[in-house]
Each structure stands twice: as C-alpha cells, then as structure tokens.
Image 1 (cartoon, rainbow, N blue to C red):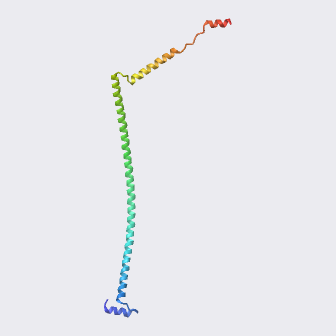
Image 2: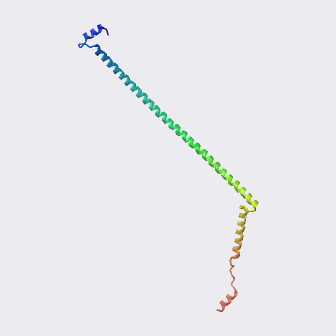
Image 3: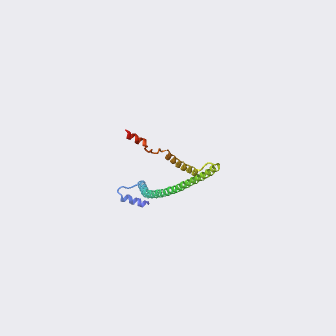
Length: 155
C-alpha cells in the first residue's frame, strides 16, 4: 500500500484503519481461504474415498464370485479324481483277489486238496445219496393180511 492510498482510505472510511488491522484482516481471509481449501479437499477426498470404497466393494464381490466359481470347479475336479481313484482301487482289489484265489487254487490242487468245483460236485452227489437213503428209509405201507380179515369175521 502506498502512502497516498492509505491517506485515501482514511479519508473515505469514517473510521480510519491501521496497517496492522488491515494485515490482520488479510491474514484472517487467507486463513479462511486455507480452511475453504481444506474443506474442498475434504469434500473431494470424501468423494474419492466413496468412489474407492464402491470400487473396492465391486472388486471384492467379483473376487468372491470368482473364488466361489474356482472353488466349485476345484471341488468337482477333486470329486472326479476321487471317483476315478476309488474305481481304480476297487478294480485293483478285484484283480488281486482273483489272482490270489487262482494262485491258491493252483497250489492246493498241486497238494491234492480238492478245489471249490470238486467240493460242489461232492456236495451234489451227497445230496443225491441222501435223497435215495430217505426214500429207502420211509416205511412202506403194509398190506392188510388175511388174518385180520379172518378175526374180523369171527368176532
């Protein structure tokens, strides 16, 4: 401020202002402007923050969906592998049982021990023999003799 303008201000204002008052007022306005900038920054920051939160929620949702789909596919694949493994294990067990049974049967045959087919044939023959014995053991009905007829006539 120049000396002439300071004089003019004193002349035009009913109350003359000092340079200090003017500086204080200017400083106050600068401070208010700073607060205004901070407010604007806070508003802009809040808007940016809200936008970032919304974006984060969207990404989280997509991530959950993607993770859920991946988990479902992984579980399905695990189930397929488990089923295939169980089927393979069962087939291996069946082959092992068959191999062991055949091996034991050959060894028992070499030792002279009858096999399953031989035992079944013996059981069949025994059943036939039992049926014949049962038929022979049944008492045959007696014929009435003439003695009974004669004693019936006498009485």
